[in-house]
Length: 333
Ligand code: NDP
Image (cartoon, rainbow, N blue to C red):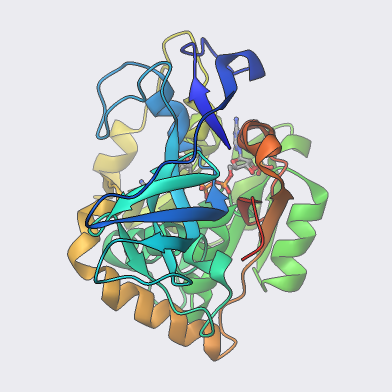
């Protein structure tokens, strides 16, 4: 079986040569462990941060060891009372075709309630990030204007739809015409902007938000973030979820110079990580599942086939190749 290791810390944009696909043995479970076959693997922008050795909220990935992340898998062999062969599980596991996990490292998922892949997308950490960031920090009210960047991505597409459920007017910012059309036509966003085709994001966004911005859900940072924050209304709220435009920067990222705007509008800007809400995950997943079954929430997944293409799928996140959640399908159940 194959494993993917980080062999050098990227400077700027990661490259294929920072990774090594290595042949390793399939491990054998000890008492209390299970052997898991990877079915779906999640690639996420935050992993870029862990590839550097800077201190952050999660430990950096070790060099010459397997990378890891969200995996949906099937139990192939169990030496645990809690799992049996054929069970489906989700957890944070190494980037390998087969892995060992202890009982506390994975949890069972029902294969018939929703497609297995959704436990890494809309019903997984991605959906929960959108849910808690928007509802707990953003607190959108009916009639308010909610702007979301990275809008056609995994988190952003769920944020916009939840804001619509709450009765807000939703404006999405994304990086292609196809994405803009998807947001307006499939997801029912009120407006969508292709930031790659605007000369001046501030004036385009201002035009799209005639009543100003009440909530700006930040996924990208940079000039887009500056523009949205500059348009905040009195008591505006800014959940700061991500800043992907800066993840591969080698120079110091300056700005945003938003202090005066925050003061003048008595606004709230608050960073968060989804794990801040870990004791409420059940509540979030239940409501997301409810909206999904009622047809109020739609989701998109870009599924790349094959373990050989994991790093390619990861690198594609920084080029906007994905619509919705980027996953890799590694094997059939
Ligand atoms: P996405 O599915 O949104 O994929 C990344 C998208 O970002 C790309 O498709 C691309 O879309 C856009 N992008 C890439 N480079 C740039 C750039 N330079 N400027 C603007 N947009 C860019 O990923 P996720 O939904 O998983 O994550 C979205 C954000 O949320 C990330 O910043 C991530 O780090 C963060 N996050 C934070 C969590 C937390 O707990 N705080 C948890 C999960 C995610 P486009 O074509 O529109 O450019």
